[in-house]
Length: 243
Image (cartoon, rainbow, N blue to C red):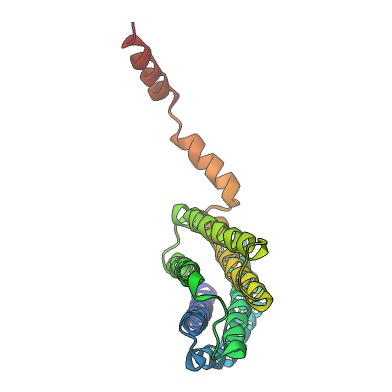
């Protein structure tokens, strides 16, 4: 009976975590549209989700405290609750970063935040974080350690784009205003930090599934995939062919 009650509480908790994730993604989608299309309406839509996001986060906090205090989970159950607490914390920060993007768009409206020549770069940043957000939600529904560590690859693309834009606005040849340079740097930073939080959620999912940090999991996975006999046979064939 107690186990059934615990599972029911955990299921409600999980639904609330998914709601937090979905709300954060909505905020970022609207914030990106506000930036890319100079849309005041989209900026206001993004900011309008903030109250419901905080309500969902508060419900998650209440559920987690209730599970820890009343159910005293251990082992994998405890790992699940603790991981979810950290995941919600990352989503909270992601919501704040998306809010900053929406605020920047609203503040500059009807002007562009960045020069028109940079449209393609900003579109790519928005696309990458949207892809990472979708992958993060999929992990919550269908946990997969290998898929989780793959988010690092997408994150590298965001890091590269942020580094490129930062170097661009810092270059002496920058031909636009100082305000645009600062805004582009801030925008790139917000997207990069949002992506980093997606990676943080993915890392928590790896820990939840395997009990290992991503680095340790990758080492273990690579060790399991290593077949010395097959490797040696390949080397032998290679050099036999050269005799």
